[in-house]
Image (cartoon, rainbow, N blue to C red):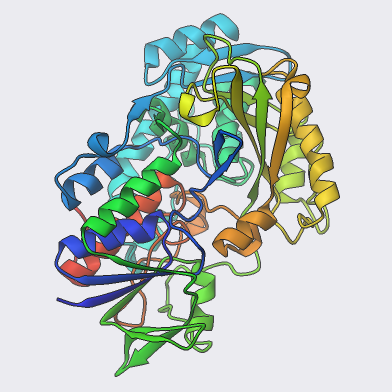
Length: 509
């Protein structure tokens, strides 16, 4: 039995901890904050309850496997998980309004043909079919295997296929998601639909490889799922599973140093001077912080993917709204209100030059309106969450409370396309910015990591789970295979496999 020290109590950290404990190891988790779950937080006030992180799960098989492998109770026995249907509603800048059914290709085709025009559904379906080829080519090396230096060159090539030959010459595959949308979807509304999946993860469609089309493929194929009572319930269930497996948690316990002995990771030192010896250390915080915990020594090998310190990912601006009035029957769980100024929004989020990143007054807004009595004091009220992808703290001063409230006014005004009379129904609101995310999770600039993607010469990969220092491993959204609820769970599985099976382990079978 080995002693394992885990830094952080986010979803990737707890996924690794539960699996390692079941394998017979003694696992201790050290979290600098006051609770578990990382970015999967919760805010409650006056009987209203809100998720402050991801609002849906798009690949539940990851957590089904985790719960099967770590205890008797399945995921569905631990939380009430159900598919939301429709999966999403989209309100485009020209007023076009379409609701897309959950995990139904034929239903999506019919809905798009009706709302956008004949042939629109088939064009979308053909693109998703090409995205399925990306999924088939990358599922194992990107999601089920540890990232190894010898695979980076191959993973730097985008597997998105060229469209079928038409005419005398075969066309090359598109280089970016933007190019795929323009060439294959034709209609700006369909392009906005495709690009909104990338933007939701903080990816710039002008630079992301065309293979990013795998994101809507995953959602359309595996469905959109919600936990009754809020997605925070998934974090609570995983925490309880860890406790049942005798994982020890210490909160308010900031790790300031990773100990080394005989050329191996040998434990951690806390801010209060406490030393906890260990046979292996799992760091589930931003890898950019790890060299500082090693006295300035970087644990990367030659050829490894390294964290991009100083270039934080985009963050999330969130407005939590307590509303008077009943949630209308038939209201869609998730609505995306698309910006009328795509170029301006992308420049504001990602920047096209120094000093250009700033809050955009008419952003793309995701509106979450769960049909969940547990989120509201009674049926005469409604809890609504608005989320916008924005530039991180640093390029934008998100500590300025007055500016944040003013920006919240813009976000609410955009959301009224989905919720008429929103301002008149508001009892109170709570605003969360990337600065709040940074304070809660320690992520640089409050950035939210995106899932890894093949292509782009490896620019969309994350640091691997094993490091140059024996006994030191990386988990969580900032490590391979990247951000998102499902991917964080996968990182925990990969780290546990490396520790239990050894450095030559090639991934789940």
